[in-house]
Length: 198
View: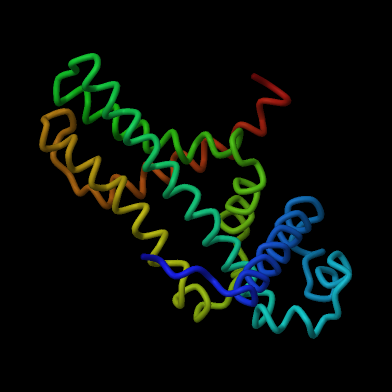
């Protein structure tokens, strides 16, 4: 049985979430340049030093926000996989078709982020689209990469299953997953041009 958090642990968790919510708002509404510890403290009506009790600095906050987004994508992949499985069973789809639907459903989870979770999409776009290194390498290595790799491995496993089912030609699932992810990110960015020319 899972141990209930103490009142102190619960309060710390709530404060951490409040800090992350404010940081996400600040980043997505005012941009990366406006995002400083001092500005975040002002937004929360906290002393600057109080924020350092929860996060080591700006990089740690950005990393925590990215982990939050990756965790959301992970949960969404679970939901979509279950929905696809039900649909495949209900419609009696052949293995090739089912495998392709699983791949595209996984891509759709990421692609639909712009509509479902626009602030999450903005954070990812900022992180991926800005050529600057926004988070120190040691912070990225310490916690962001493995959850992101796990999400990509899940999509890669679906690509591999599509190859095994004969729906896709043989090829490296990891490379294909990166290409799918990059192409999807590019399409999401190009949508901005739709304001000017459909």
